Image (cartoon, rainbow, N blue to C red):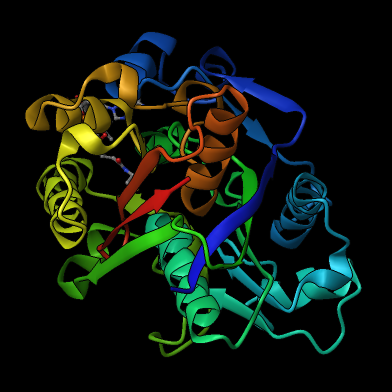
Length: 330
Ligand code: COA
């Protein structure tokens, strides 16, 4: 049976470390508030001249090296982001150009915090169907240039960081690889976590009013997001287990989208998942949206937390709303 397996992982985060105290100098917040509510201690910000595709490029080079491959081995690029370089063309095209891959298809996926799992699912189906043999799947975000560094935006601003993570997916005939992926969305609460402007839903692309009202910055109804995450994450985890006729005990490692440590701890406790089976790094990087799962996956592998034959379950919830899960046999 042909499956898709991960042949390499990698990530890149910018050098600049921004602590909670650094943010407290720019808005009315505190290290204590941020740690207590989210678990975040610091995050990284990219320099002005480094955008989404450049972060993705740097993560991709490391991932290719990890897989022992040259860029020209890649026959398809899938890039998940909510912070693309341009409105169009997609950042996957820019990434392909940076990697020197003319002619290789390049797909942007817009599923926010579930972007990586949506991309993994797409790549898995391409590989199992035989259309592509070596897919570069990247999640990349540059949030820092679009956050509001003022009291008005503090609830959102303190949560997010920049970074990129990637995997290479290829076929295997062995009894391992992606076992299943599960994707969901519900747009009825789109405005609970969104960046409303600029956009084609408005009569004008961008207006002075939008700027003055701060509608160009991300907005979130934190409690509503929190409540929905607590409901959907257990559902999509159970769905993945049921599909594979597995129990929670048979999962060796859980990697959740790093949105908020409190959400992850609550879900783990509610479901009876032991804390030592859950890998978290939100303390270091904040919420890097589409990049958070591949960054955490790479770190967990390099720390020896995932060995051959073991199972990792990944799950996400975020803007859209979108939610997703996947199980991989390593
Ligand atoms: N620093 C200090 N105070 C802040 C703050 C900040 N950065 N942001 C908000 N506050 C204040 C609020 O203004 C409010 O003050 P008030 O009581 O005087 O009105 C108070 O803190 C409590 O705000 P509230 O929004 O009720 O806090 P909360 O307990 O819901 O925590 C979140 C806020 C954002 C941490 C929480 O709702 C959350 O984690 N939601 C999910 C977010 C998430 O995961 N998003 C990403 C999904 S991909």
